Length: 430
View 1 (cartoon, one colour):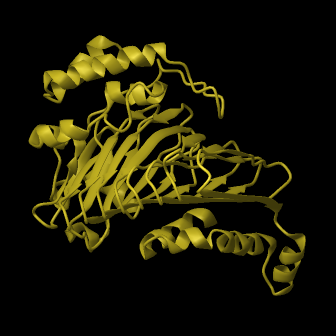
View 2 (cartoon, helix red, strand yellow; view 1 turned 120 degrees about the vertical axis):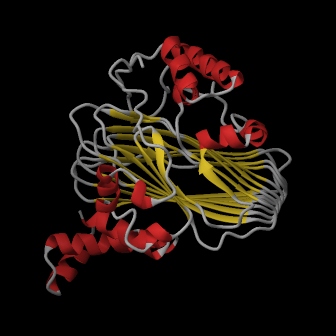
């Protein structure tokens, strides 16, 4: 299949995936929008050579639900990352995407739960798929939602039936292992009335001299009295542009929680958002961004209050060292009819050295006089007094800094399942 991004490539991709005509038409519309749209006029400067990106790479593997049947090389990669261990491979609720396709998927939960790759959902549940696809994140929103619409492949599709509680998190893992590859997964999650779901994704890539591009789109629909928690720990290599659009819409008395960890990538632009449509709906976001040498992490959250008595809470923790840049960028808007609503934003930053930088770019809007919005921000350097005290107790400088950082992000770690908190500790220590 032709590597160059054009209509011929898109038609070939859609044909390979055996898609209906409406999806091909959607891809071509998205491609035309991509060609017209410019890069964002805010945030880091993006200098992506779209002619050098490999837009699709098949693994030549069918989706397996038996770990023993997965290609040995691919198994070795995921096992070395700790994604699948000797016990976990027998559990349900795990999906692994390698390059552009899901290669392993195991679901042994309630038979009414739908948990599969997005490509598979288009084939097996076409009406449900079409009902939600592209309804929350429109392909024309920005250059990268349009690019995703044109070349999307893989990702996760989840439907949780009414009043169903998933006892343990469903998990997906995304891996880029090819130089200059673009990964454009599309994730759709529907948590119906009264249902509950916790979903966790992890992301990594090998390091190359050429930049890779990750431009995923996530659409989440939280029903009346439902609850969804979406946790991410991304450790992309420092040659990956991580440009992701994630959005949830929350109905009456529903709750959406974003738990977002950004450790890697060259440039990240990611602002998970909640549209609090229903009365008494709740949106929470807690995130960390750890930027080191050569990294620019521009992350935050967006909360849009539409319903009455809605609540939102944003907690953003940023760490920068070795000349890294970790910025908070967010929007909180309480609309005119969102009476008696409340929003809280708290941004804390630690700078490890004088070469690093962090800025806060908040946009806070209240359109009625019965609501409350609170914003708090702080930037501090690692305290010399605290370092001296810890070193006097026998720790060296690096150990003392590590202890202070771990304490700084303690609120974030508490929100993670134990095994992911342990993995986060490992990544930060590295």
